[in-house]
Image 1 (cartoon, rainbow, N blue to C red):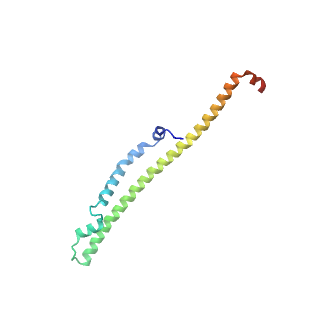
Image 2: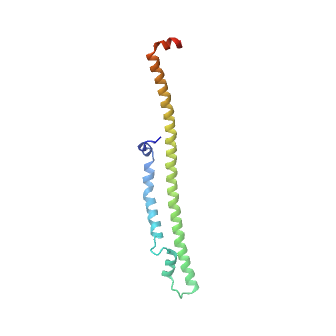
Image 3: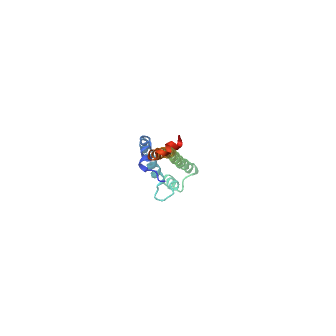
Length: 134
């Protein structure tokens, strides 16, 4: 049985979703800019840009530490983005679960109401049933 999508979407806490949307969009943009290198290997490109091939070990180590800090920053940013997305997903799932329970209660209530209405109509149309029940 398909649920009416407008009912589901109207019960979503859109103020929370929209309030966090700019933060998530900024995080995604930073993550994409950090990961979207032309050559596909950002760490190697950073290392090649900062150190010449004939550099000594200390210079190369410093370069590697710089690249490692950049990568760590990107990983932390992606982790925050994933956490924000998972929180929103959890909110949406909780709201959908609440809607599912409400629909189940409403379905049982409708079935009970239909049964009572059917019995009332049956008794109203057949007065002899009242005599039989009494």
